[in-house]
Image (cartoon, rainbow, N blue to C red; front, side):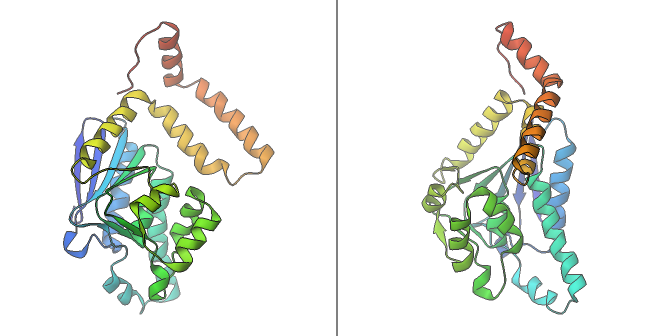
Length: 258
């Protein structure tokens, strides 16, 4: 791959943004590679957890501005196609069956902050800055808005999206965007320990069903959501993992899922 480095260690996959000379800025080909990597991982039954991180000083600076400038000559339909391309990447990540952890060791800005936002967990170094800075260059944080509103709330989303301000990792932690802050020296180890713990202690089938429900249930009306929850409860009871887990619990067996 041109823009990514992929490392697989047993049931944990690392996807590394590998365009450090451009601060891992995104263009169409970069987005396509990312989507392909996540779709391939979704089909790999061995993979339980995915770690997304960036090579170099930045996690990702967002869209490649030179690429955006080229797009200004496009027709509306051409721009819609390109925008849908990014939307499909974020959708693939958000609805992914595996847990995705963003390991942020440098600034995550604009679309790069969006990339981190759609992950299930964000680990960050204290020095990293986060920001949806699109409005400062006359652009809009359109696609990530959907995910940020779900991860935080409208008040926080308004403050971040309308001002385009940068916030520290500590501030991002306080609003629930960042899950954990680690030093640059220890973040790699702490992310890996967390990933291994998730792979060992949680059921892959249960994680996939739970993530699906989190994504879908929020847009439903109360009774529809409750009926959906009951149906998924019934589905879960019939899964191999549920039968295995309950059997191990009743037999007082130590259960490891990896």
